[in-house]
Length: 100
Image (cartoon, rainbow, N blue to C red; front, side, top):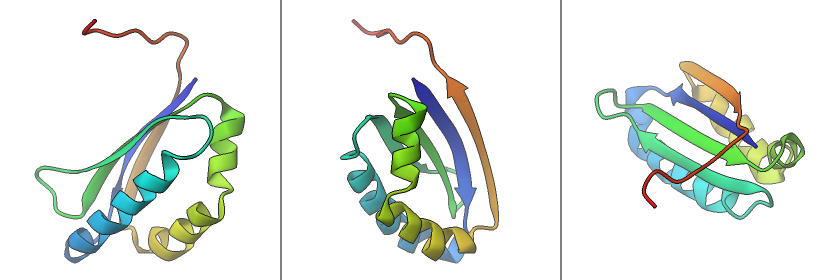
């Protein structure tokens, strides 16, 4: 399994617009084959900063997601507006519940 976490930083005045965009992106992405988890969260202290987490069954399924037309549209339309970013990829070998 592959997991990715990070953040995108947009201008603070884009915050409200990006909330709507990221809600739609998350809803669409969660339908992709191999998507285990995918979410965005607005940073509690910095308007315009959005943190994300995604987990995929395999590198190939993540690559297919990255090549989807809606993902290209997001990248072309919104990534050009970011003013900062950070992301890290993890290879996960075991997953277990901590609450069961």
